[in-house]
Length: 330
Image 1 (cartoon, helix red, strand yellow):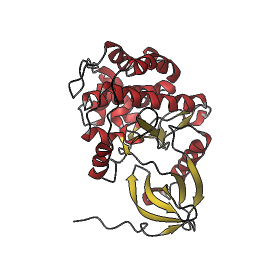
Image 2 (tube, rainbow, N blue to C red):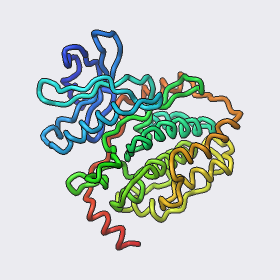
Image 3 (cartoon, rainbow, N blue to C red):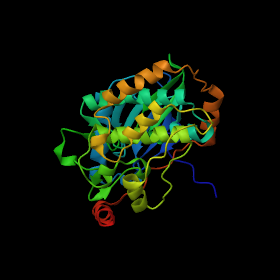
């Protein structure tokens, strides 16, 4: 049975935006495709999901996300264009419409070369260096939250999106990734310190990025467990597999293998200290790569046609129970 059409499609928001479709659904909101009728341009409008509109804590987090995006300006970060409240009181963010697809969808149809994977890592690190310099930790980096498009001087362009679980390092009241005792996030890309409710910093984002590097090159995640408790244990104890060749059979250099191992180390103290330090290690590899970026427009179109909605954020789970279970098993 086909799902009922979204009532927002075809409506007019804030007197100047016509909603034309759904771009994605996440754990706390829906992102719509829309046209700015005054300027004649496509935009993306994110609204807080109907199921969460009565929760004040999530409304505050939505507002924090808007303020965070507004404070960050970089070619590899999504740009906030407007923020307002709809007639029914629902907060809405108007952002630039990125003509690309999520890294998740792209990985489902495209076998990444080392050069392509390194460029995705490199551009994401450029964005993270700006975020971390402003005291902003993303905390939910995953393939769904990187948009990839063809173009730019390097052949492809990455945009980091969805700051819904962001943490400001100056905010001592939000030291863990929790809301009312629940952990929110994407289990396969959450760093051990997030699972164990320990302090997070920029190295938490580097861990998730390192795991995405593994996924791009391998074609899948090396953690195959499905139960959140088992996934958590795997983050802590499962050896990182050596990277010798890509899923498409191309050679992976020992230097790139070592870089991803360090970024994805379970112990934050053994990771790179900062995005800038990881960039310094990656940059010579990017410059020295002789491979031509072959991410073609048809590949992006095929990825986009598979689905118009990304996977939703994982359901929350009890933070205290998770931490106790892991402690008892170690």
